[in-house]
Image 1 (cartoon, helix red, strand yellow):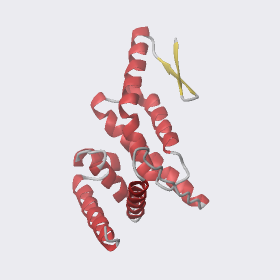
Image 2 (cartoon, one colour):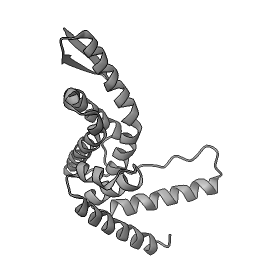
Image 3 (tube, rainbow, N blue to C red):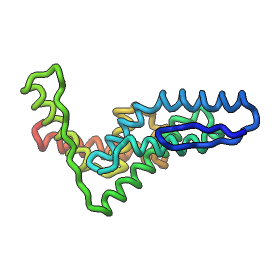
Amino acid sequence: MRLEYQFRNRKMTFHTTDPSARADLRKRFETTMLRHEQGLLRYAARILQDADTDAADVVQDTFLAAWLHFEDLHSDAVSTWLYCTLSHYCMDALRRSKRRGTDANEVVEPMADGSADTDLERQETVALLRKVMCMLSMRQRMIFSLFYIEEKSLREIASIVGQNTIQVKANLYVARRKVRTLLTRYDF
């Protein structure tokens, strides 16, 4: 029998002989998807920043790849595998965006409960942080985001970006120094 699973307008099939195994596989996949979706979306949005590729599209492609390889993934390595795969899709999207020469600027939405001054300060701060993050190399941006925002360990980051922990520490050090220097330059 064939298990068919609809995931955001894409039809996926999986071959398995045991009906209970199919149901278990689908349930584990859905649980994994729900557990990681928001973190992956945040990470993709930070990496893609001004690219014209929607972060949700890249995350969807990541989940499609996860579905295709889900049976082979060990439960303790799923998170690392997802972030690694997402990083590769983000790099591909950035390369495509660069080839097309696109540069879309995002607008920061004002907070509903804040005053106009607070919203303006928030927009200026977010714009400055985006500007500073764009000045980092893509690898440094990925490592910086994974370490400080996603709170991944150095070992996990090393697996995700394909470097050893010493290289990750070096990239993190350079990224910190660059961010500190740029923020000081902008009197932040």
